[in-house]
Length: 209
Ligand code: PRP
Ligand code: URA
Image 1 (tube, helix red, strand yellow):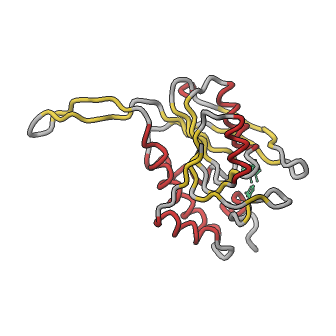
Image 2 (spheres, rainbow, N blue to C red):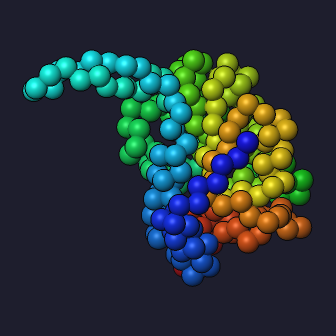
């Protein structure tokens, strides 16, 4: 299942991050800001426990988060979303999945994986700005499941129906949260209109010298 975060504050920032004239500094800032809004919504159903807190006046019934949060950026573009989530959930642990799309086949190639043990029993949040064919996200979720993770959500910035269908087909238990569900993929398997190559735009690898 996919949930679109269509709040005007998110959609306004999306309009700017999509703009081809937005440079890497602003792109990074916007990726972080958009991520915070999506994450705020995506974590609304995580487990909490009732606790009693003594205020200066009286005991209060309160609720604290009752799960280990593990954020899993998909390298490299997922790094651009990490800081935003850690500002909301500063005690979250971080695991990494290194994947790139083969230029010919467009299939994900794995080159790195490292997870904290809390993926087992905790709540894993896979982050990657682009969920295009869905191959990379699906592979990241598969790696987590292979290591024993059972509670997994996905946060991306832009996705499309093909990618959602692939992830839903392979992982019907995983919910996807996105700021945009675009029309389609083009012949190079880029999201249209999308925002281009997120890794290059985040890290300035395409900008002129
Ligand atoms: C991009 C993006 C996703 C993937 C999405 O990464 O950040 O990981 O492509 O495509 P998919 O849904 O079709 O798998 P890329 O392979 O360009 O690597 P990079 O982040 O290192 O630039
Ligand atoms: N990866 C990107 O960075 N952008 C796309 O549109 C598709 C894959």
